[in-house]
Structure formats: structure tokens, C-alpha cells
Image 1 (cartoon, rainbow, N blue to C red):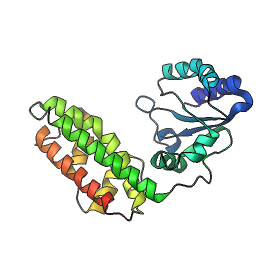
Image 2: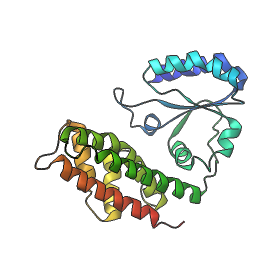
Image 3: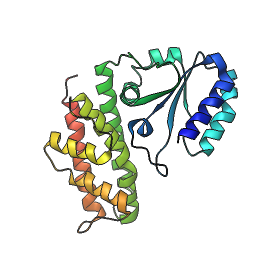
Length: 236
């Protein structure tokens, strides 16, 4: 990981020079939960400006970075970082919570995030993903394997949103999925057997004993409904 990050910074410096304001590692790698085979290296790259010239200069770097197995760096101008917290409060809150400056200045330090925008985005994302899960599940209820895959594919997103719900509620904000689910269960006063079962299936690749995909989906969806209602009830 360290060699990849150093190589990336070297390439960014060579390409942009003084136009590189900051390069910041965020996400699981910055939080100490990075796994070589299953985690991305997420990097925010901040320039003085982002024009077609900078996009063209970034192309070989971003292509090389994708070949290393991680998504392209998030490319923004310094002004966009300053003015976008109302549009992306959840993302910037994540970056502020766990980050590591790789080059330049810490553009996230002191960045203010409005709680009202933050809460609204979390609820919007939860409701949108909830509706999407229902839509997709309606096509798979008679097909156990595709239904289970749908649940497994969705659980990371709902855990992330659950973590933000905890932050908004003033509770401990964990990074690991099982810790998030445990804390959510405490806050929602329910064991969240659906979330736990989906995480077990994600780890083992098969359904937990003594259940079916439909029953697991029923529990999981009910817990998502409870999470949505919890966020909806927070101070706006």
C-alpha cells in the first residue's frame, strides 16, 4: 500500500507541480481497516483548477491507478472543495473523520458541514436505496441465490448509511461493519438479526443455518425500515 501511494504522489507531483494543492487518502485505508484483496485506496486530489488540460494530464495517472486495483482519484479544485459541503456533506464528513495527507495542505481541516444538509442527505440516500432494494427484490423473491446476492451486495452501503445515522444521533461511530450493526442494534433497541445474517452470508458465501433467503430478506428489510424511521425522527 505504501509503495502504491508513494508512486501515485510522485506521478501527481510530476504532472501538476505547483497546481497540486493536496492529495489526501480517505476511507478504509485511512481508518486502519484496509485489506489488500478487498479494499480500495481512495484518494482526494485537489488542484488549483480543473480544466480539460488537467483532465488530459491526469488520464495516464488515473489509468495506471485503476490498473493497481483502486478507483480513480476524486479530482476537485480547491474552490469546489470549499463550496461543495452542502452537496456532499456525508462524503466530506467521512473524509474529515478518517484522512491522511499524502501531499500538500490539509484542505479538509476546518471545513464546516451543515447538519441540516447532512441529515437530509443521509435520509435521502437511505430512502433511495431502500426503494431500489425493494424494486430489485420483487424480481428475485422466488430465486434464492440471486436474492441472497442482492442482499450481500447491498449491505456495505446500508452499513455506511447506518454509521452516518449514528453520527447524526450523537452515538459512537464505528468503521467496521459488525461494530456498526452492533451499535445500531443498541440504539434501535433490536438485535438486527437480518443485518447480522447478511454479513454472515457475505463472509461465508452461503445462507446462515435454519433460514431462507426470503426470511432473511424480510428481517433485513424491516431493520432498514426502522433505520429510515430513526433518521426521519432526528432533529431537522
